[in-house]
Image (cartoon, rainbow, N blue to C red; front, side, top):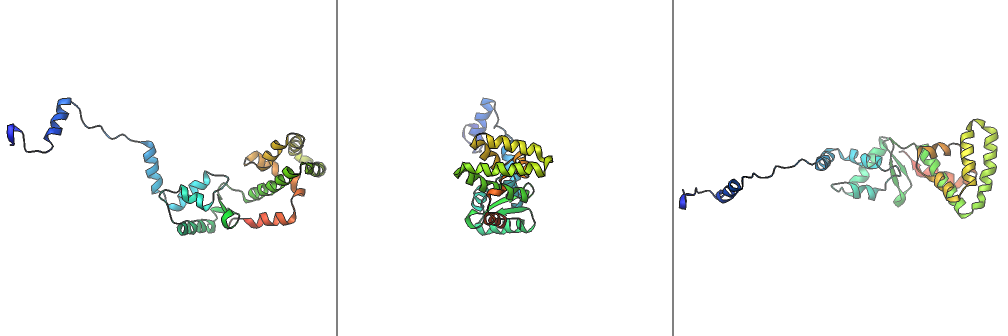
Length: 207
């Protein structure tokens, strides 16, 4: 026993104060966000990279992937992982050098990606010279003649060609199932040069 009948316990004052207040230490509160973070850290690194790409349909560059990975990984490690995922057919690649972007192959149709890139090229041409829409209208007329079953798409393109230019350019290039379907029956192929077509096909690859 210590002085004044107090036990020789350095925690005695704290214990006494708690008893006098009639309280106990606050219990730890479960946090779903902390739990989700902890579970994500247990996920293998290649799966975490794929998870990031699945959340970004427009793709990510290697530096953007590296910034979002927690904890950070070295650039050589990330390149090795991306190369392995490409070899497995789980990641598609577009562009070269610093312009390279990566896509989750599970949600990326390579032909749809190439079509969107070709339409981006055509959209840039039309934005520079809106009169090119006349060539697209002429091509659309031929499409109506050779493929009457595509009328629903032809009518939609006609409506867009006759409407505001920004709406046309947005539909030509946006990432959506509706635009992917429209681009399959499109009158804008005449605005893409063979050189540009070759460049797009060379720069979009799965492995």
